Amino acid sequence: MNKLILSIGLLSVALLTACNNSQAVRDENSQFYSVPLGSTFTLSREITIQPDQTSVYLQNGKIELVRNVDFYKPHCKFELYTISEQARVVKPDTFVVTRIVDQREDVATKWPVYAVLGMASGDGPLHLTFSTTMYLESSIQPDVFRMNCKRWDWPNIGEYLSINEMRQALGDYFTLTLAD
Image (cartoon, rainbow, N blue to C red; front, side, top):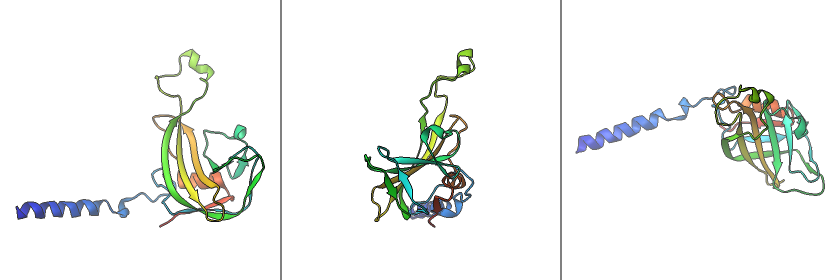
């Protein structure tokens, strides 16, 4: 019986050692390196949220109207909790990442013209959104809600954004600092 308990204990130690952080991917160009909890987004200049809106889109370091966003390329959506009839200004601040959700969702679009020619295959969605949603917190600006970085991609080969792709989308508006 003691040998069984000793064996289970040694196996547990071996498994815990194999799962330590030294095995984690830490390549900022990899989709498998996630933004750690406690990381921060530092806003370097004011962002104006237009009336009747709760968000702005950032792509290639610029704020874009939703109709100008190329959804197949890396982009981020910076969001507030509440809607207002007045324009609001988010002032430079540091926002702490308190929760992260990675998800894949079907993209609801019209079928492209070539689909009628029989070139579309399968019964599934034509594209998926690969998104990383980071919930943000600020004691100075409590209406700041989250940063959602994403792109549309093919269902079988699509990838989440890497940290460096997120940084490219945000440009010099936000600095992403990773927690240890």
